[in-house]
Length: 318
Image (cartoon, rainbow, N blue to C red; front, side, top):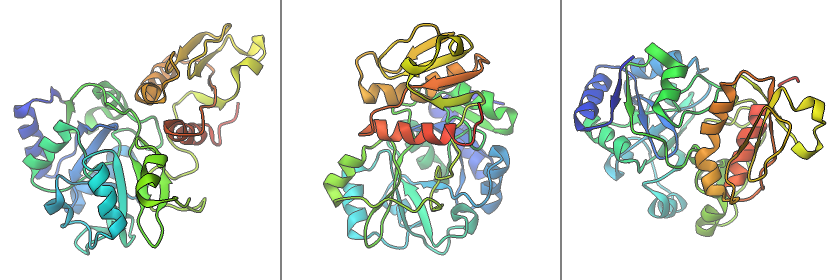
């Protein structure tokens, strides 16, 4: 495993790895991604192998600019253009009709493709150096906690990654918001851009059916640490249940737990989101019986964190 500081020489080296069909982990403004050339099916297949990701789960394609976007999508409806003008480059993914050249492996055989234009300078420099769109899901084993630092990638994927570019902590700490563009816009995954901000541009967002799988992160169980997660009001947990567990809350502290962590003492949801996965990684490394998490407010970025927490807690028996 090769971990390099994300300077210009390392980015050029990473681009050469990609052009030879390799996979590279790199920082984005959301979380770290695991990238391969989107138009090279053998390279894309390595993403699925490294992550142990099922091939029915589509990938997000990252593009540098409108010229690169036009190689991936067949059309840009008015709503997509409006959202792109407002939020790109940035942490918004749009699901749009794909061009036939996009490999079916990238889109899980769907006629649509999830695409975004990242704002992180390292991601953009890598796209420019590679000269092609990159298919890039989060750089972690499938279904586990998303990585917000290079050492999370190294711990989760190890030597299976050809090269890791270390660009420090991801700014937003949550994955991109995913919106499907059609006759009406649908919020497929809440994320780093609040749904309310998107609705200010395109109007009310529909919600997908429970069994929908048009985009990453929509499976019932996902984003899960190895330690069991329980969504619960910590104040209601008996003292005898606290000593073998950690607790995570937005702003409160709770006594009696082995470890207590707050996402934001000020109750700031943006600060909380930026620290969300990082603190879960920390707590997961303590080998405790479980992590009790106080529910977050169901608005703004709290909605995105609750989406991750519900999926992390799904199907876990305590």
